[in-house]
Length: 267
Image 1: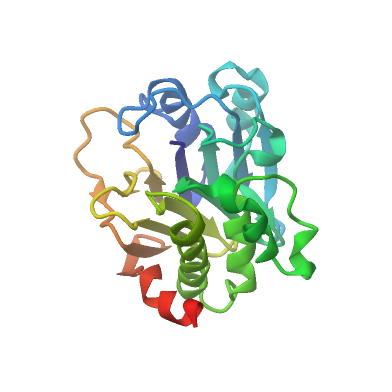
Image 2: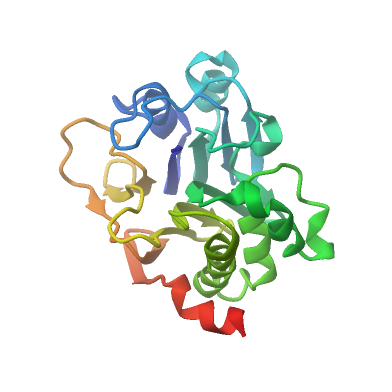
């Protein structure tokens, strides 16, 4: 599974999350400790916000630890809101278009997890993306499709409910045409104003790891797949089945349950 980190707060250099900590995202790309694979070498990406509503985006297919351009960029760019991701493919090709984060307008999105048996219903998933958004479908991942379906479900109006409904539609497909586990996910998304994150699994107690922590020194909130330093005990575990909204040091946690929409989808 992939590893990712997101930050919201006082502007900092991207390297303060991506490369400088002892267990930074780059370190996790070749030495992850809380996922099935220690190596996440199928590409990387960063989406960051600054003076414009739409985020900047940098993605490539190299392992994150071996790209000098990534280290140079993170050492020079400051941002008060960014998403960063290192990829371990669950079946789709290693290509730039399949690297996270994905961007649409002011929205950015990244995902870790799997939709069970996705290859068996990839065409069905693509058909859920409306024509007005399908031109933005650049890659072949379940993650990008989930993002575009969530936009169609009303991400602007209610991010939690929209992502819940989109996840329910993928969960229904996995149950009917795919395989178990039907849906496991952590995801981060932002509209450039707020940072959101979700942790969920359709099979009990199997959701990928997710933590958040406020830093007084940085005056910002980090949301991460794994703590950024070994032995740190001031990280809070995001409960399974939760959707989090981060604003400053405040965290609002609400239930995230795609299953409650399955009956309506079946009808």
